[in-house]
Amino acid sequence: MALVANDFTVMGAGSSRINGRKMRHTKGVAKSCGLPIVFFGESTGARMPDVMGAGNIGGAEGERKGVIGKVMNWMNAISLVTMPKIAIVMGKSYGQAVLNMGGASNAHEVAAWTTAEIGFMAPDYAVKIVYGTDAEKDPEKYAAERAEMARSTSPFDAAANFSIQSVIDPREIRDYLIRSLEFHRLRLSGGIGQHLMRTWPTSY
Image 1 (cartoon, one colour):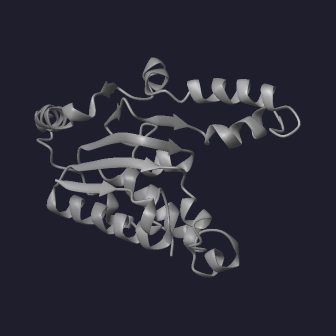
Image 2 (spheres, rainbow, N blue to C red; image 1 turned 180 degrees about the vertical axis):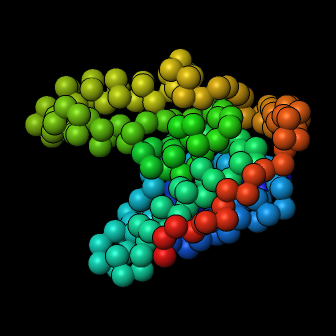
């Protein structure tokens, strides 16, 4: 089994140049060796490394290093790997980070811990984008709208619209993975993937 996880404390959130290279390599090895892939996602957004000062995704430096092309390779690899893919959302997971870690139908099965938060962006910023409310000018309205935004990030909301298949207690993760991997082993393919990555990578 191949494991892919986030650790934004070392600037490896949902996306970054070095982190992306490691993840692409892991998917390639999984495909070559016939290994199922399990994603453990917990980051506050795909561009968290930028916020922490990595400076390797956006701006001129990111363009010089071809980071966007590498992110596209990352996403292509997710779609082309046909080995069983199971995504677990453990905590905060917003925006592109959801997609990068197997969410939004990029894995065969997506589950979330009860501690997960899933959305298009963190509630603090979502309020400003969606409602245009200024926290300093109208704190009461901002607080109410933020609470509403935060409520919709619940994993149960994601399960209600079938974005995820299961909401599980973190203590049940081992049993859940064993059952899921056994289930996928029963597929007609026997868990053997197709060789769709023969034309990959598609970018520099």
